[in-house]
Image (tube, rainbow, N blue to C red; front, side):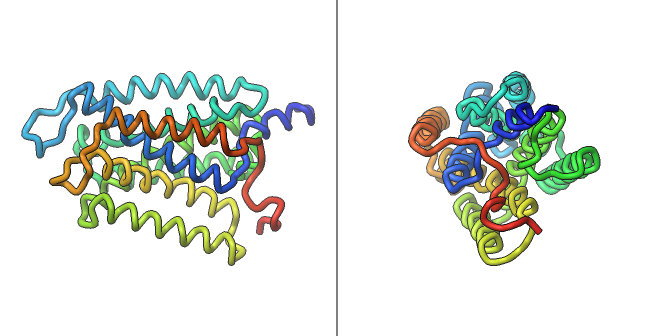
Length: 271
């Protein structure tokens, strides 16, 4: 591959800045409210507590978002340069697909939150392992080929799905949605401290933070739209989704959006 083509492939990964993480958290929150809007509000999927029989809402929602995700990933891979709206649309598609897929796995398949979380964690680790064995690294700064980008989006989709199951598991284990959000927020704060004050691998910290933003978004999203009796604010799922989408669009327009490499690549050498 020519140097020009390598720059094209690399340029489709955005610079990892504070703005990146803000938009990422909003996108994962939108994934929760948006996925629930389709599978629960529009398709009528429910839970055992509602006293109703489960239908195919989670499965249909997964098919809808899965097809959208495949199309957007295809467009992303074919693109010759970084397109902010295309990139973030693909992230949103991965997180909505992750929401409905995780709900299908943990609820419709009956393996529960622990089983779903462990299964999805295994898929994330397997994706990273195969990616590393195939290309020698999982550093996002090295994404310069279609193969690397395919691994990138596959890993992201698994991580988004894992985050949904993990967020629901923690929230339903006692802390509630707001408590779960505080736990995952504290986890991200710890990762930030490790980034600024230690020499822990930048690649490891990036993927840990990327994965952890998803359960944070899941618990915040559930806190917004779940019933008051279950610890939520019971806001309209479609309206919450629309408000989050508007906020993301405004931030993309306001915050600098530029291609870039792995966080810390210019500040300090990776260990």
